[in-house]
Structure formats: structure tokens, C-alpha cells
Figure 1 (tube, rainbow, N blue to C red):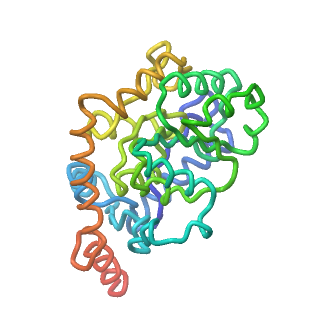
Figure 2: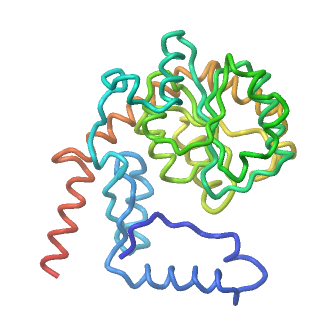
Figure 3: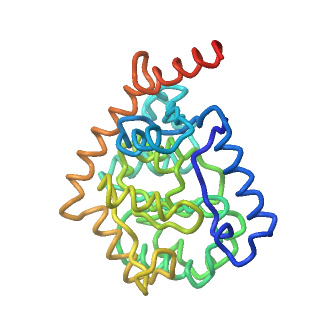
Length: 291
């Protein structure tokens, strides 16, 4: 039994099938094939066609018990927490809420390698979009390209955060209206549960597939514009600015937010008593005990 969503590395189809990573991927596939089932961080209402096809034609059986990010229930509303107990980035978001200035959340995860050249394009795209933004950078990126006065120039609109953040709290903040994401599956689910549309910027692993699901299947986001039209290539500032404006202010934004609200409600119901994920988990427990 495995507790993760499938992730296939590019190395699996690479030129060296005997590499340690390729062998590991093969071992995982064989172990999954021979297992009792797959515990999946998803929920029936999100992808019913795919779950039904998998369970009817492929297997082993998928037990959707998510979204796991809702496993601890609803968090206290931020306005109920005293300001002196909040981190600086949350205080900043609260001020943006008072001003009525929608915020774009930008974060690429802890493993993505972003080149200095790409960072420069991101900075320029965000600055010229004139959209308020909260950009979380890894410490490895901390000293790269942020010593040119960028933060001073955008201080009225944006903030660069170098400390650990609670991503779910950011996405659930009332003023956060968009998310630039590499579309790792956990991030996609957190964005869905918070009803925040995604600017999909896939970088590796299964992220291009997740981005396709978000943009083309669910229609709850837009895809970043690469300079050569490929899936995982360089993004120039003009393309980023264009897509940021489309996500935050585009004609389809209202429709995306409406659909996200419906899916978010379905996610909450899925993990409640009697919901689809609740039933799936109980069925799995029953079968495990009787096996």
C-alpha cells in the first residue's frame, strides 16, 4: 500500500534505465502493482471519471481519502487572532485587506531550482504587473538578485518573504486571490480548498500533468506563457505580466472563482462524516480488518 499520488520522474524514460533513480521508480511501480491498494490524497468529486476508470480497468484499487490538508478541520479565522501573535507576512496581508488590494501569492516550493536569469524576469514581471504580491523565496535564492533595490521599488505593492510560512494560512487569507504555483499535487489541493485560482508554472516530475488538469480539465487556472511555447521552459517578464493580469483581472476570473467555490465546498463535505472520503476510509479499514 502506498500513501502518495503517482509521480513519474523524467529519469525513468531517460537514456540510462540502470541508473539508481530509474531502478527505484521501477521498484515503486512493481510494489504498487502488487499491493492491496493505493491510498490517494484526492476525493471522488474532484476526479470521478479518472477514479472510476482506474478502479475498473487498471488497479490496484484507489482509496481516495483526501484532501489531507483538511484533516485537522477548519482553522481559526485570522481576524480572531491578535496582531502581536501573527507573523509579519500575515500582518502585511491584513493591511492589504484593509486597503482592498487583492494579493497574488508566489511560491515555487523548496526543491525547484530557479536560475538567476529567471529570477530577474520574475521580478520585472511582478513589478510591471502592478499587482500586489507576496513572494516566498528559499534561503538559497535569498542572496540572488535581490540587492538591486527591487524590494524598495515595490514596497508599496509587494513583499519578499525569506522565512518559513504557513502556506495554508496564506491561501486561506481573504485578500489572497491568485497563486503562482509549480502545481505539485499537495499545493493544487490546498489552492482548491482555499478557492484560489492558480497560475500554473510546472517545473518537474508530475507537475505538467497536474497543470494540464488544473487549466484544461477543471478550468480553475491559467498556464504561464513560456517564450518557446513548451511546457517547462523560460518565462520572460512580458509573458508573466500578461498571465498575472489575466489571472487576477481577466474576464474568466469570476467564472474560475465560482467553480473553485463549488469544488472547495465539495472537498469539505468529502471529509465530513458520511462524505465520499470518509466512506472510502471506513471501507478500507473494514476490508483491512477482515482480510
